[in-house]
Image (tube, rainbow over all chains, first blue to last red; front, side, top):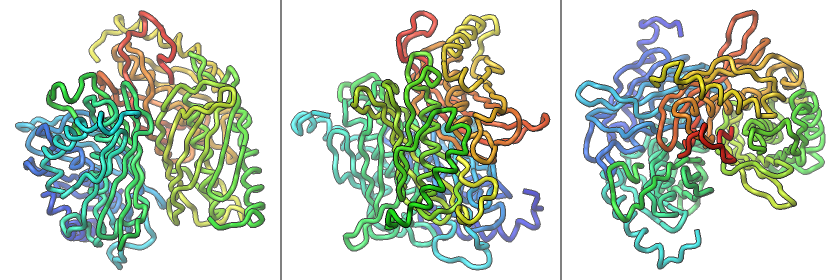
Length: 156
Length: 156
Length: 156
Length: 156
């Protein structure tokens, strides 16, 4: 992933714009904390509507962050269209705290399938706790994202 | 799973009440379509805030339904406290349509871990399309749900 | 998967021949019980060298059957080259008995990735016990298997 | 995992002895390269009977190493009985080379379920290539391994 920041800037902007088109991103109040070649960091702040019955972030919030961040991370590598094929998520600890951060990194970029790992952390007074770990397989499509955008691309 | 409907009624009501305590259930607009021993069916209707940039249900919505429905399905069997250990989700087709339904069924109830399978379908004019399939491992806790509810139980 | 048996015969023979080239198939003593469009059933008989310390079939034997049977099942659909991208395996019960059978079926054939489910059963005096369930993602390659066989194809 | 090497020595010897009881370990020619609290490294050398049709280590060999090493790694932490609940394995590159090494490390020890990650590397003339990555959930049983050994314990 030897792109320079300058090379990456247009793709980065493009991917952020596509994410801004996701009604669900806004509904979750998700933010992109970092986007660079092979990396996507996404987070949400604590809000009552994101919690389960015991006051922890809902597992579905963790799953959303993992799904979205791993897919976008895969798209950063070559700017190809991507489709989430699958992911596996292990919940490690209750997602307490005021912010939930998902860090996704491409483990192995592929022509057909890219493998992306993600770890989720909950933040309490600046201290991070590891709450989940995940492994995703992202299908890499033939077309380039920035040339044309047929339906189904970047389909987190 | 030989409980009669009568035996199951109190546990069913209890589980529905716990789900009603989830801020995230309401935020997603999720409904419990069926709850019986070993089975949980959960669904959401199409709303712009549940979609990704191409107008399909977001993968995170599918993941939320799978996470929640598999955990609740495991809790129906013996009324034990449950914790989602992990799940793996394969996305099969774009989640188009007006409603997204997740059907979870216990494959193997266990003392330590129960294995639950789930399939997700999108509905267009009454026709269902298979959009995702998943496999979850739910940790079974020692305590009974209806006797006491310490924090962390039924922690989807 | 509407191929007739006649259409499938050459591909079936080709796939069986490729499996016969696997040193590991012979080392495991694995047999192909069934091969048809979208389906592969593979089995091993009980032998001391396939067991773990308690006399059950080793989890690695179950994993081998799942890996091989899901990959071959994906190859039956269009005769494309295939590569195992990933699989997830839940062990449900000790693999006792005299024979271990893995039944793999294509859930969703894809252009890029095919999704294949597998269930494993151990047989004791003709009675089957469900010992494992799995979900696999198989990368579908562009080339046709029977035209040319570059390295890396059907790489279970 | 604050045990000293001295504290760990008896458990380490016990676990190595149990592995020596696995007929399948010998059949695969697997060796334990390292065993310490939270860590198990297992490897096999290249032999024709461990390969697939293109001369790479068979995916089933990788899966066996992951299954066994993750289970044993979980058992090192508290010396409890363990049962593999599930694992998910992504194959990243063809397993070429003369030796295949699996490094498993406990990510999160649990009372009910421990989460263990594993990475597999193939070695060619001393150079390692990352060929697979995996995530496993191991059920932790109530009894202590070294006190009594009921059937089904350490059941990789």
